[in-house]
Length: 584
Image (cartoon, rainbow, N blue to C red; front, side, top):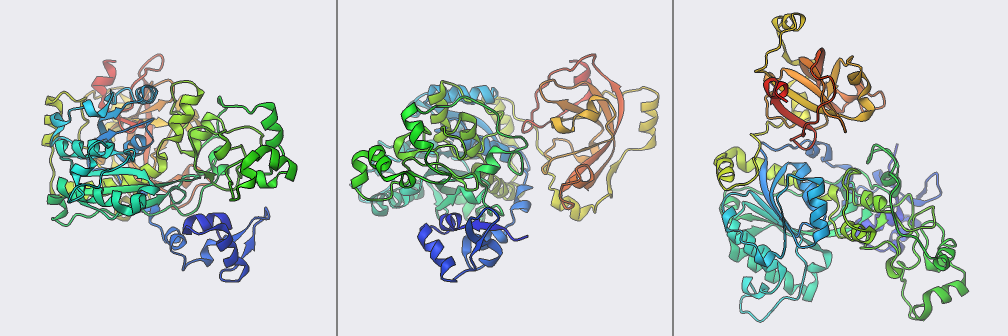
């Protein structure tokens, strides 16, 4: 079935106006269609000569999604905010050893969601980064863009003094990470006719790094239901760059996500958006907004209502399409601001006459529902509106992990783990063994056993003997699949698309399901590990959705009630041994 792309979305992907995209359709430049809801647009498969669309059609997203780190790469996050960039990079596999943020509420949000993160609250000007020198792989930060000086002869690092980019550059100079990344608004490209970016380029050169050609990343291309654009700067330390290591930008997702994807269960979220607090309209404004159709704005109001609502702006000309703007359920959101009910940048719910709630805001930024925001409602909106979309950061993070894997494969450096512990950082986990399901499928076709435990182990089960020296893999089981585990009747467990483990597959022995909100209770033995598909367990799933399947057999209930335990690897897995479990 062809993939429909609205004229509005084509305009956003190509950076043209809606009028231009509509003209392409009406003039026959590209075949124009109406979908079942009457929206005008195109089929992506008929737009193969439009580069952004072609990239989405030919994407390697699925392959890239399976990139997993060879080990946990250490990172520092500056200007961390409420954690959109930090969470995306964490999900990709980075291990944050320090996050700096000045806003108190944002720091509380970071601590609440990841108590193990080392969150340093305060002014970056007062932070000494020298203890981290040569102990951190990666540094990142979304530095605010202030006025730069252009008085210097070279337009380099000295001309960034007094700006927060200078503080990011200082952190790079003191830490010497292998790679660093800066994130900013699209407007930085053209700021001061490009002179600001030239100063930054020269400053990066002075630091001893090579800047990858900057790119404006359109969030709608990376599984984010929002028309947000961010400028990404990636720089590789010269000694590494000279060895031929290069950064490859992530491939886009295969389609554009919409508010329907954000608010209802489906491809993006497992459940409908939960209810949460939110702003309300005063009666006068609610009366006006009720007249605006889905996807409309002030121009759709009766003329007298337009004059009254717009005031003097009515006579100034221009589109002002953010005023009295109601979003469309079948389009991505406009870029979120720090509040959903500002007159110039209205973000009214598509089908209800109210501003978007906090959780709707968070979903549009692709924060998971478990990510909680501290402070009052205004604080929460502000934190979410200022964030980098999590899925955008996750996509960039996977590409960075791929680069680090290439570097680490040639230059393994485990000494930094010992150094990090001596420096007093929180304990770093042991090396992760990356399991890429696509590679696994090539090596082990479907149903071929990767491990098969010998019969003697089964006799141990029958005799009730436990080997407390053996590995135990603890794995989160989503609530919708938990029933057979609760009843101790589970026969198999399938992993997610990624399986990062500190234990090699041929060493897997015991398995314990983790129930969200409860913990662990029951012990199983892993009898077989093999490549399978999610379709074996979920009839509607893709038959080519390869997963690692563990065939398991119930051994015994270890505890009378569930025992809480921290999931150490990406909040999904923990590797330990039976002795440690029995000692709980």
